[in-house]
Image (cartoon, rainbow, N blue to C red):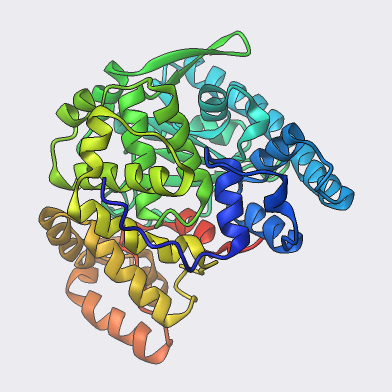
Length: 404
């Protein structure tokens, strides 16, 4: 592979963090003179502090200040408790869905940590992502409501299913967050729920069956999610590293399911980044995917988000947002770019907030949309969002968390 990724401007602490959590060589001498405060900050930002803690603990603590190990252990222990609570809530939701005969696939969360890392404590998860068939969406919403979950997501206009791919819920008592999906992601809309369900994997979690994506679908889901966010969390690259190291999927078979050139480019980007940053060994078809000039361009473009704690929300730095917008467009196929243009023509909940109309007159939002958008931008000083219309609150919220 052409090792053209230039990481010479990475800070010493970021380079060291990559070696510790990856497969790169490092020793006690690499810890001498390190800025521990910066290293810990990066580990928190990239959500890889459980891995950092375990690797430092395994290597020995002689060169690590006790205060640093105590700080990491505190965060590590808090994450263990958080993951156990999330696991309990996942089992509760899964049981309720099964009882009401709602087919559901859990996308990430505790089951991902268990399957990839073999230990809940080694990965962080903020919420649960559950995929259901569009025909069971309203039924699943009712079940979550019965369990005490509430949502603030607006569904005023009939176009919400087109513009979004999930609804965000939160439990007001336990503060557990749940993302209820009816598509795997905005970036992979072509794989129907029935197709994913037929290819699903069923795993035993605490003695109960949990439905989970097949290895191939999981790989493409993680690739798409990471690429869409510029890989600004190293945690996502660690997931790809684990999948590659486990050798649990057939790349050729994946590419048979995902035929678009864009999907090959994104898989190539992920392979290049894990190989160059985490020293993940590639071979065979993955090596072939990495020999892709456009994938290399995407990998180089994403280095900006990895080395800089960026704010990708609409309130972030304008130059960064402009760069992110160009990056997002570089990920899209021609068909997706056309779909993006078409989506802008559909009204949004912001239009309803600006000009409330009775339901019988909602059709007027279509011809009024350009004027409403202009009014918000000029008079309300609304920033022009850099993400496509399918970007939702969760993605903006996660993107804006540059530090812990």
